[in-house]
Length: 171
Ligand code: FES
Ligand code: FES
Image (cartoon, rainbow, N blue to C red):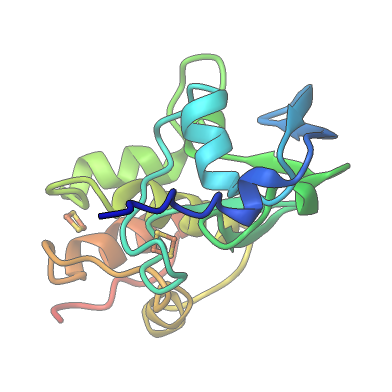
């Protein structure tokens, strides 16, 4: 019986390229294969495991990071798209060892259980800061972030407190 060699993944066959990117305020120059996922580069190459992988298909938001200040799913972004951008991950939110107000509110309200969704939730919530939103608007903007544990009330209450918004009750 002849055993054929597995096909080399095309993404792995593309030559490495230089990508210049700011990660949590630090300019970094990477030599990487251009179609590697931002998620893998963060977690594996840059030792920033705070960004989580849930679905790997753009459905759950566990991998949310900010690119030039806007939320993106790091599992869907090829690293080449990050050239000359600013990326902010969960590791970059606390300043001078002081937690971001969203992180403090999650602690206070028990907004995390297993924690897989939490970094993506917190990063998305941090993006909402400086916006005047009520609880319903917070729920809408968090709709791309899926949690299988909390039932969302503790999360929405956490975000509402951090934003100074009315908390939305149960649900
Ligand atoms: S892991 Fe990226 S959206 Fe689910
Ligand atoms: S805390 Fe477990 S998935 Fe949200």
